[in-house]
Image 1 (cartoon, rainbow, N blue to C red):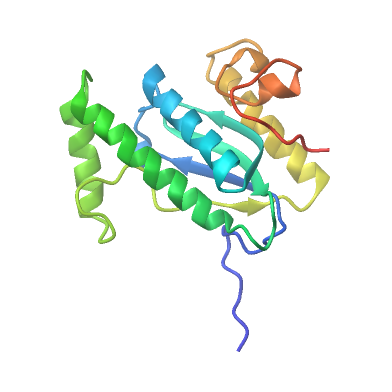
Image 2: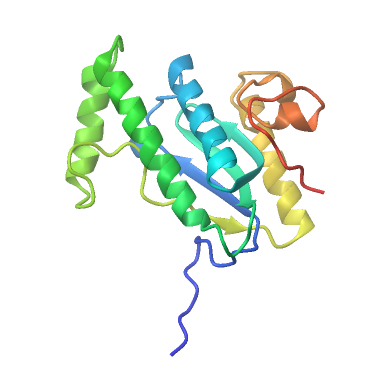
Length: 187
């Protein structure tokens, strides 16, 4: 019996994927510089130590968009890397919120606790939504569309006038400016 590939999952080990990871309830957690730094540090760790290849990325206040692939297809499982990235950043950021100072500490922890209560996989807190909505980029048109979408997100939110001016995005790299995460450019 042949299994049907699940939609929105990493079915092709050699594929390049557009992924969105979202904080539960779309909570605006990444409004604090320290939480943004933790995400960037974790992303860089996954690139250096876990075989993640990042082609594009953008961290928004409640979610992150990534275009990713494996450095060694077949040997690296993207699903495992994203799981580890989410697990580590969740634990780190929740610890930071618990330690304070965070003006929304009680409210955020209450939301994370509530989300965990709805999910048997979590015991105390759930930071990230379960799904990643992974979409394989199969055509140049779809790839370009997702790349532009990622980079234009901060512009659409009114945070910057030009995409390359947003620090937490690979739009900087694509415009020749130094970025925070090593990028493997899409041809």
